[in-house]
Length: 197
Ligand code: ADP
Ligand code: MG
Ligand code: MG
Image (cartoon, rainbow, N blue to C red):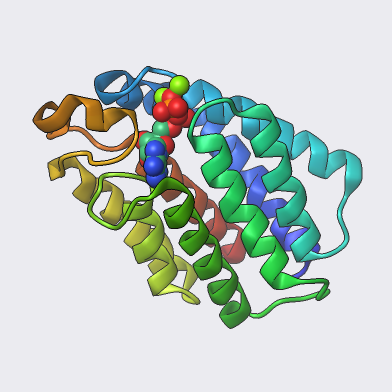
């Protein structure tokens, strides 16, 4: 996987977020403040534009630019969290021109760890980590990772939120999918799609 692959991954993810922004916002309106779709749509559109303008030459540089752009364009909790995921993973990839699946797995595992530390959350807290951690565990098989992320997102429906805005609702957060886990599923679906092309 080269820089072009990583650019296609994130521009494909940006299109998926654009397409599903209303659904993500509807999920956030049930247990949050109804802005996850608009937050991420703005952030990922900025990522796609930045990648187009700068055409970073290595996978690591693609992820660093994307992470930096998310942090600076998304005001909500998801901006620093996704920004941390991508920046930490980008840093782990270093300046290699190409990366293999195993390196991607290690890099995203480091990124997921950093997200957990930043947000003080663990698996089962009804956050993006409930999709992210199973997806990373299924790597380097990209189709398996996409499936694991989607199942992880679906499993958040039954959970009670212990982190983020949804935790203010206590038991009333049960019965709704966590919006960040839904967007993480889109991110891994895009990765599998790009690998298939
Ligand atoms: P905000 O809650 O600030 O409006 P968003 O709506 O964009 O931000 O994103 C909300 C999502 O961020 C949640 O659905 C959840 O997946 C994720 N999230 C929030 N807080 C945390 C946390 N402490 N750790 C991990 N993920 C979190
Ligand atoms: Mg929100
Ligand atoms: Mg908000």
